[in-house]
Amino acid sequence: QEIGASAFKNNFFSEPITIPDSVKRIGNEAFKNCHIQEIEIGSGIKKIGHDAFANIPDYVKIHLKDPVAWRMVSFGNASSDPFNAKHS
Image (cartoon, rainbow, N blue to C red):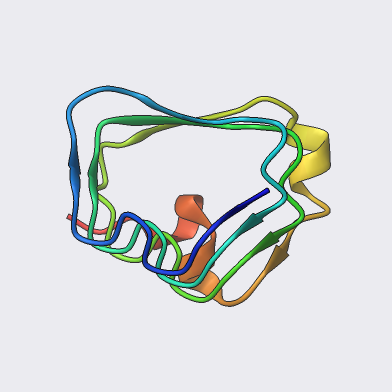
């Protein structure tokens, strides 16, 4: 499964987001400029597109189901990694 390009761009999430283990790819700008409070990222992610998490808030809580698998993820650029993309 995949979260498509710009799928949630510029949205506001008042509830936590869970990306299930079945999702393998997050498209370009999928969560760009989103107001996210909290996100859990499943262990199935293999690739994250350019600017997928660009300009997410500094205060977002990020949970990884499998931190070891996270090291194997292919990132399109620095703003693809939610830990690097935070911006207030």
